[in-house]
Image 1 (cartoon, rainbow, N blue to C red):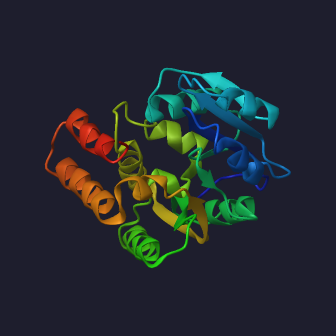
Image 2: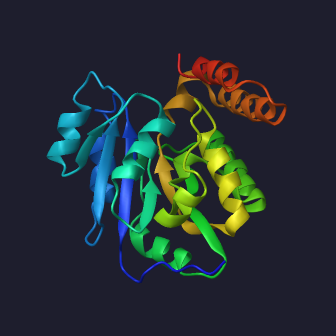
Length: 234
C-alpha cells in the first residue's frame, strides 16, 4: 500500500481523559505546535478540573461514556484531520513530533506509526522496561497506546476503529492495521508517566502486563483481563 497522505500538517490529536487534572496541561502544551489541525479532548466523566484545564489550554472538548476505546472513537468521529494521532493524557509528545509523523506517513507501504517508549523518571528499572518495550515494538511492530499511535483517518475507519472492549483496544487496532502495511516507529520517544509502575512496583506491573497479553492470546474474556489490569491501579 502506498501512503497518500497530503504534504501538510493535517493532524487531529485525540486525547481520551478521565480525572487527568494533574497531567492534561503539560500534555496539551507539548502537543500544541503550529500547523496542527486541532486537539480534541474526549472526557469520560471527570469529577476534577480536567475539562476546565483542557479548555483553558485551547483544546476542543467532547464528552462520551467512559472507556478509552469509546472515547477515542468518539473523538475520531468528530475529527477533521487527515491523520489521527491518539495520545494518552499523561504522555508528552517529543519536540518536532509533527515532522516525524509526516515523514513516516509519506513512506510507501505504511499503515500506521508510533513513537519509541520512554518513562518520565530515571532509574535502572525504568530503563529495563523501556528497553524491553522498544525491543517488542521493533521486532513485532506492536506499539501500545502510550506510544501515541498515528494513522490516516481513511485507514482508521477502514480498519474499523478501536474495538469496543475494555482493554487491549490498541493491540487489536494494530493487528487490524497490519493487513494494510507496515507499522513504523519514529526514532524519538513519547514520554509517558510511570505512575502505574510506581504504584505497584516495576516487577509486579510488568508481570500483570505479560499475564494480560498471555490471557488475550489464550482467548480469555476481556472483562477478566480488565480486572487484572485494575489490580495495578489500586
